[in-house]
Structures are given as structure tokens and as C-alpha cells.
Length: 236
Image 1: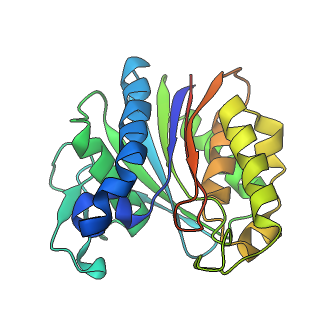
Image 2: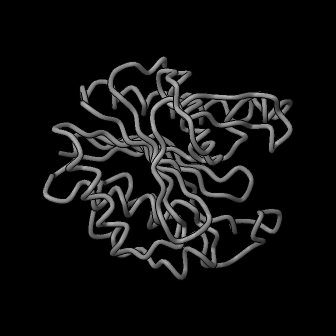
């Protein structure tokens, strides 16, 4: 059963070693993310599922102890998902590596951890079904949901300026901050793809996980420092 969620953005720049000289700019965002993870610990879950967006239209699970690396962005740094265990298999995708880094900063040892990579093109109905499955995997399930809003807020954004981006992000922030399950489920997958909003699928997995519950939401932070929408929220 779903009991809590923390929603955080997943840019590698969240990791200070990657951000280098720009690291102080994101300190308030990092603090908000760690505050959100604290809500997960307070919920006393039996299992924590970390969701992270990846390219494609499927899902892939990763066990506790799976390792991710930031070598692809020029930093010799590895992180493990939850408490270190022998976990052979594929390396964590970057979004889950950022989630693993957050958990390491929070000294997470409150419950076993599983990673779930969610394809950015996964259709909404399959996202909702994946969420229901995750919520049914343990008596008390918490989710750490990694994902960004649109990448089209300014001319210098990765996707350039798109007039629709601010409206999409405003609606997403409202839904995340109020735990509005129908609004999240109704996010337009095609529009999210055009706006490079990587969080859409993971947010809809969360909506599926929380079905049948009445969570309260709180938006801790909303910003777009590089033309990309970043949101931090908690559900409990």
C-alpha cells in the first residue's frame, strides 16, 4: 500500500561534484530534496521504490546495491542504490543514479530499496498499472520519484523556448503540490514529449500507486534555473 512520496528533479547538476563551480546555485534545491526524503523516512515504509525516467517505452527494475556512475558527465564518482550489497547486473541509468546519490546524502537505511526505470514514452495507462503493481509490492510502500518538467522555458533551454512550456509546468506543479491524482493521470504524453518533460511518466506511475488513498501534497520548491522546470514536493 502506498504511504508516502518525495518528488525531486533528476539533473546530474544536483550532484555538487558534477556542478563544480555552479554548485552553490542549486544548494536550495538540494536542501529541499533532502527535506523531501526525510518525509519518506517518517512514513516508516517497508519498501522504498525509486522511480527514474529513461529513454524508451518500457520499465526495468534494479536491485538494492545496484551501482550508478557519473563518469558519463566527466566525474569519477559512483553511487549505490541504498545499502551496499552485491548486486550484479546493469548499471543504474543516470536518473536513478541521482536518486541513489540523494539517498546516500540522507544516510538512508530505513527500508529496503528497489529502483524502477520508467520509459519516458510509456503510455499513461501502463504508467498507472506500473504504479498499482509497485504499491502492492509491500504492506507500506514509499516512492522517491525523480523527474523534470519541461526543458523549453527559455531560448537557452535544452529544447529552446516553447510558449506552451510554462503552462505545462504550472499545471504539473499544481498537481504535484496538491496530490491531484486525476490531473497527473491526465497529463498529455504527446505534449510532454514535445516539451522534453522527462518526469511525466514517473509522475503518472506515482498517480497509479496512490490510487485508493487520499494523500496530502506539499510543493516545497519550484524553479527553472536553466530553462528546465524543477519541482520538489512531498505526499503523505
